[in-house]
Image (cartoon, rainbow, N blue to C red; front, top):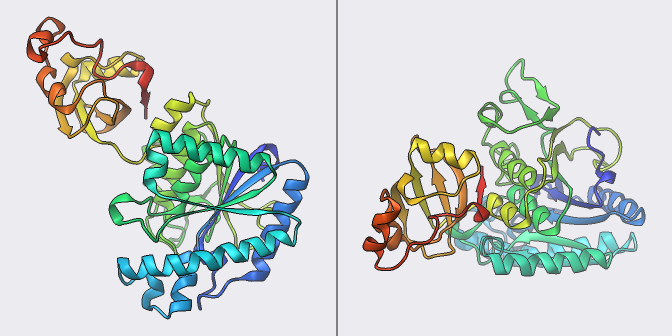
Length: 367
């Protein structure tokens, strides 16, 4: 591999539903045993590994006899997830025990990693489990998640888990061997082996479909995951899991190079998937932000959403593109009072002395 997973002291491996579960909804146990053997080799060599594993809904749907793989309705998906998760955990515990490893289960929702305090709690749990030599098996808690409060795919969850665990490497195993310059089904599609920076051209190459029809993440979600991982200082690999031992040997893949790691707080901000509101800024304020400045009220042209001081906000330029994310210094009501006003007019509008910025640079990260 261009990126050797053995070089990451902590590694997050994501396994898609189509790899773990066959077309009839049964577990591909022999393949999974091979993955466990690879994890065992890495753990015995001193590497710490956590797994983000899909498959609960598919397994539960088969057990319950639900149509459309358990995805005919939200109620079906939640019931399938609740039933399948216990089966999935048992299978992982068995194959890892055969390698002399202990498995642990962690089920998380979007809110668990978007709320700063709960994120830190999850981070501490992951750190302790990994330091004990345990292999955490993580999945989104689909039994309680709804469309409004869910990751929706385990690609982005894996990147957020890497961030929380302080991992330097992420491997997304799925049904495709990396990024192509167009849909790989098209004639002449070229494989991209290495991505130094995720820009508009890279994003345009992504195709939103899931080839198996079983999972929920296509290439769009994988690019989003790569962006989250890179901003946290983790390299990410998209690789096919179709071989018997996909974590061993030299298999074609796409490597996304990590950026220089931001502070833990700023990395958490950059990797967030939700924001309470949005501030739109003029061209001058956008340039100032790109130069490392705080966001001042005179440069704000619009305030959107309902939020309180300390909530996460997206910051968009004049063209509507989100260029930064940060923590609000004001509620939305107070932000509307002072948006566009110079400092000497802000106290009269607020009724109290204004703070130094709408979003301070210490609590702001560029995207």
